[in-house]
Amino acid sequence: MNATIEKEVVIKTESDIVVARRAVREGASALGFGLTDTTRIVTAASELARNIIKYAVEGTMVLHPLEDGTRTGIELTFVDHGPGIPDIAKAMKEGFSTSGGFGMGLPGAKRLMDEMDAQSAVGQGTTVTVRKWRRQ
Amino acid sequence: MSASSITVVKVRDVLLVAMPSDPDDSVITALQEQAMRSMDQHEAKALILDISAVETLDSFFARTISETAQMVSLMGGRTIIAGMRPAVAVTATQLGLPLKRVETALTVERALDMVSLGKRQGSAR
Image 1: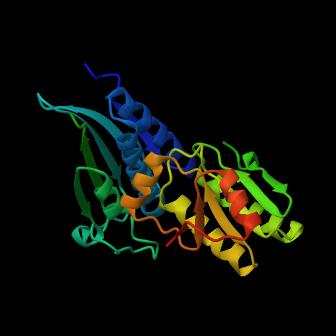
Image 2: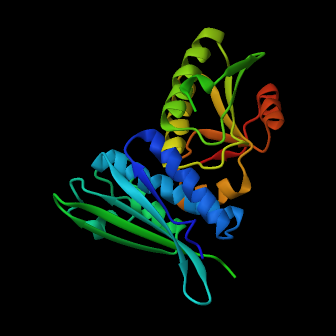
């Protein structure tokens, strides 16, 4: 039913962050998210897409609609084959950043979304999945 | 969206910049450079950033605004961001965006009033 919402964006340059944001804005609106939630989801996507550019040079974002019978949601998966994060649990906590920035990428995106899973292996890459459910 | 899309307009001794709705990093970086150059050229006393069109304010954008405000402050000027959308304000608060030294106003008109009256208000800290 939501096949047209499914989307993949290659993230290679800074302008791809804008492409990813637009795809997420369109997808979230099409799934019926309100303006505030759409802004949260797009902002989280912007942080996670920028993480790929900053740490891994290139990767992809896959946008996936969610249905679990009673709820509608959106899932965004960010995959890269960069250097990986040695302690992913620590990277998801407040105030931790390896790039000396504000350390907001992962914890910030987590706060804006309902769920976040992250897996990383040093030398192999990082996969971050975030989900948000539409309020009934 | 190219970097040349940023226009700095001088109104009396105030610099006014209208941000596009979805600027990429190069546009945001160009904003900082042009704002600093214009501050110097025009001996302006304030920089007003109209962000009423901005739909996404992420940590990179916020950090650049914050840095620019610090630079403007070192040059003796003030920076006011005007017209933040409600959804952007909600997201910025949850994200904990660093907007130090940046004053805020509901509209550009109010920001201009703040400058002409020499008032300081709505400072985001």
